[in-house]
Length: 335
Length: 228
Image (cartoon, rainbow over all chains, first blue to last red):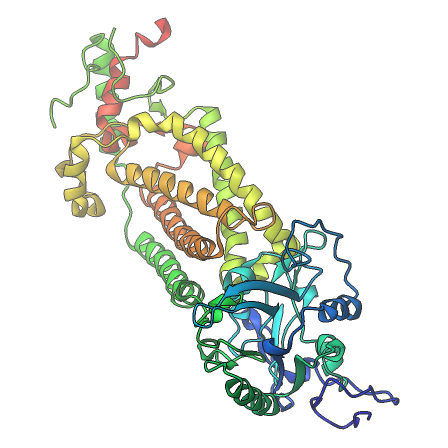
């Protein structure tokens, strides 16, 4: 199967690319939000929202997704060291946009030992904390299909996105001082192909399509898991950030924290919102008012030294000079 | 020989007709203007990152990346420079009883009606307020500044702490700019003040009107000075 060239968003990651040239559709014309007042499209192309669904219950921890990610994005992660854990590398890096995180879970209810493997990476929030925190116009954009993308030539490397992200995802390169994270393969999706990780996944634990299709697929999977005894199976599509365009099927959706600290109810931190909202406005207003106020007061009043003061000063200096040590000892006598 | 209670060792009457008084030495003035320059550069580069509507200021530093890079280094320069200024000025900026009287009569100050105010030493309450506000704000700014200096200190605090540090850094920066506005305004509004930081001298009339205790002490020391 090959994909039709006129489709707005790809419906699957498994199809082969078209053989004829395709015009990418994730350019400026599809930008609906842009950091720090950067340019957005006036009438953005309305693309069907996409999503990547990661079914944790199907994952075998092979790391094919990581390899595919490195290959497609042409990154060169450093060769690491083995410290006795399965994570490789040990954390997300500017060269590793996705990472299998392994958790060993002793289920107290069943007494079973469970190996929980979660593919970590950017969640592509509908309300992205990184975009909220970013001070550089146009460095972070959101397309009409939901993908949140970093535009590296506008990035200044300040690290505010790291503080803004509720999932601790972006990483700043110490080489070019720009921020990197999963792009949801925006450069593949733009031309009708699904993300590299989803294409490489041998068990179809990672699937890709429209957000509606992925939600429906997740519902089927959840039902299946429930029938197998996972009563708390569910979809992770956190509403605190407006929903995400990367979603998980979890066998224990009631305890996301056991999957290597997946946040229970992620939101943009209140302090980040107020820093980027009222603080900015109130701060600039206060400075503006103070500046205008002091100029106005300076126009209408001043304190000047009178000729009389100069006379007093001369008298005082002359008298003191006549009586050595007379005035100098300090406490103002005529105060 | 009369001791110094209200003046610094360099302060003295330079001439008697007209009366001219030395207030700041060359080093202190250079130190002050260096600090001022770094503060303005920090304000401009900081504003660029504070609000998108002021991002264009980053062009003054060669773009966003250079602005992000240079801002913390200017901050360190300011911190060191300010602390050198601090140790020179702190002694006469300690609060005294007459400061409370002065502060209570702030209306007379604004009206320029200084007869109702106590005689003061080298600094009044307003000047001391600016001094201590700047000191504490700069301390908070440098501490939070290191916490958010992502390029060199990405791991010294947790993400949660860094969020708070970003907020505190921004608010402190705004308060610093407000203090700066007060400082510049007061120096210009009170005519005759600026020359203290440009030429290093003030007129006798200025000293008599605004800092009479300081002036009296210097007047009384005229003959003893050369023996020091």
